[in-house]
Length: 247
Image (cartoon, rainbow, N blue to C red):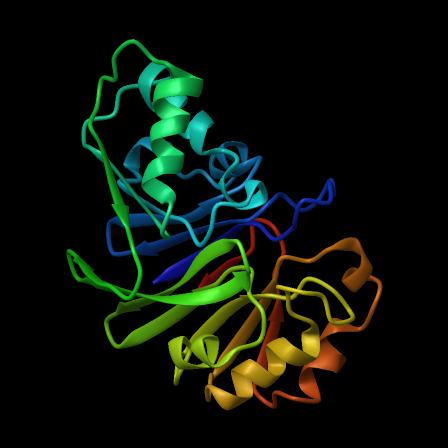
């Protein structure tokens, strides 16, 4: 597998960091996880063809994680020819979100391809030779969220979007080879993680390598790696846009 960071930033505009977006390649399959603003441009920059992506997964429905979905659908309909269906996955409430987006906001008279929608809680999907397991987690009182565990050829990558510290997150990341997890603020903030809390999750989950991402400007002014290393003794990587990591 290979992970490409398309967006390591947040809702706070940063020139060098797009909103959340992550491309995972396993053999000839390309999977997209979240698509915040700028994802389509980043795909072009890393030379990944949008029309080759058949499966897109969303952790939750906040705009900095899903903003480019409308643009992706529009591009597939008017910017090129999609040969296969577009399969979209997300947490509880995702189907309603997509129906409003497609039918009321985009209002395309006709799609040239099929869109399949699926809501996920605790689920297991097998797509060719890749296994994707989901687990519900806690972000905020009003926001449903899921984690994704991608397993391919005895290697595992867990992606955890916005979340607060909880046992569900630790369970979903248990014994993962790589954990890609948000690290938003230097101090505790409701529904988000600090470097120390991200490290604590990785340590309790017995993760081998920790990839920190989703940085607000405040946390970037601190020594993220040192704070995290007080809790986690394994390898720590700070995500950068267009970074490629072999899993």
